[in-house]
Image (cartoon, rainbow, N blue to C red; front, top):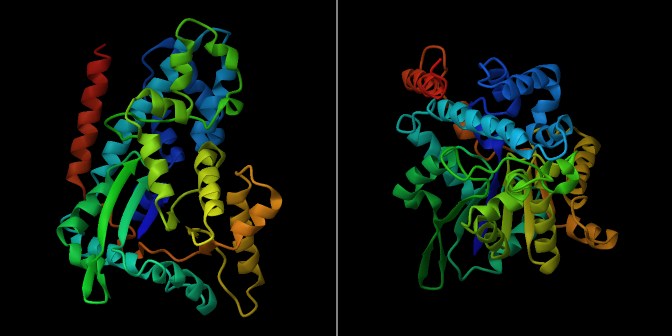
Length: 367
């Protein structure tokens, strides 16, 4: 049985890292631009900082500031933003001491065997049928990570060294051990094949920017699925196959946004293809259940619709799969909340990385 986790930036934020686009933009706008083109880019960001909290959408809109055929100039801004983002995230990544937090990490990932326990009785029984239908199979936990950081990889590395924490179950005379399966960084990492951009052409304000020699190459870097394809690593295909082979999908720390609607559409199609498949979505801002939980129930319904609106399914099919989308406000990784070191005085390693970043910037601009 394959259980797949889709992991978003909420995972890193839960750890205590400052990894939102707003966090990075606050850093980026204070850095020294190396060219006149980048200087204008910085000024634009300063004048429209709120827009850049959704930086991928903002980058698509920034094409409106360029003349037809000026893809190379636009790409200078796109490339610099991504390179500086990678350096910034490396600094954030270094704030975690995994050896020091090992016990908390193992405790958190041991809860992968308790995914359905938080739901009400009737909903829990429905989800348990997924497990019962595959009782004769080993449980494998796969991960599709939308983050550029290696925080998930570092945690899973510790889990692999202590595999018994993932548990096991008995089937007849067999004991089936649960395990970690595939880990796929669908948007690349801070070290290679970073994918930063929009979902499709409709999110690019001025397409004629790319009407020039090699314009298709520059445009490919801005559209996620095309950027992935251009790297020739079949990352998109691998991730899509992981989804297709899953019986249960758990979404953690992801906003249901337009720049990733390709994935929400795929998940809706995955649900439609087999009525025994179920989706669990963790929502950070769910209201507290009161004695009359109408507010919570409305929030659940809204969250389900956020996902299905990204699909091209007919309305009746959307309603059908919404019954198999389960919403929770519980944080399965609560045991590793705020394990990141404070950057001001606790993490010498973080300061060392900052020094390395400054040295690299100086090397790029020795003046």
